[in-house]
Length: 227
Image (cartoon, rainbow, N blue to C red; front, side, top):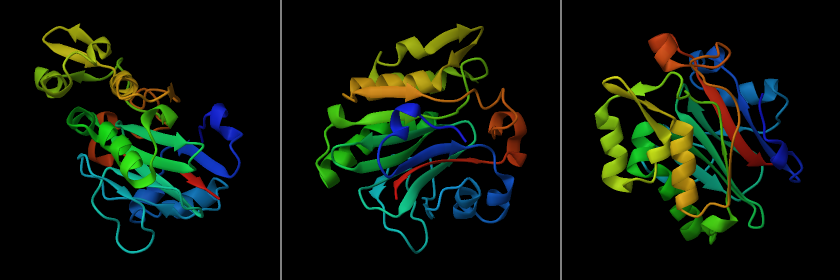
């Protein structure tokens, strides 16, 4: 399990990135069991991710709603997103006691899921972007992520040149540093600190990668919550 040392000293905060867990996927998404196995005594609250921009306030219990981000200031559970190359983004507003977990694939990032998460933090909890710290977990790296011009256009049509440093030409395609693009979007929106943790998922067999393993890929859980 990976974590951010800068967050480890925050009282009662539990966060991290669990590596590939095929059993949780096979068990219908029993990520609470995976957390317990990692020594985290919190139930997992997740959403049904759809590569969109909806970010919700957490409501434990019942069927997970469709969304790609979830936020809370309540205690006693861990917010989680699952990935297999996309960027998991954990958000922390220390002074307000608010946390969020966001699933940011290229579609969601290009469409504005990160900015939508910041809007949710403002409208639901009164948290402004300069009070937010972001932690980006393991995802596919620029070493492996070749994409077409349509992906580049999806970003530039909405955000202009904000993500320009995240792209490099590679023949008739482009190499995308998806975590760099996420960082640039968060910084442009006013987030005070953005840190990346972990390796390229496609290069690292311990982590799930859809590009590497296709339909047989497992998933990893990224989580944050208050005890």
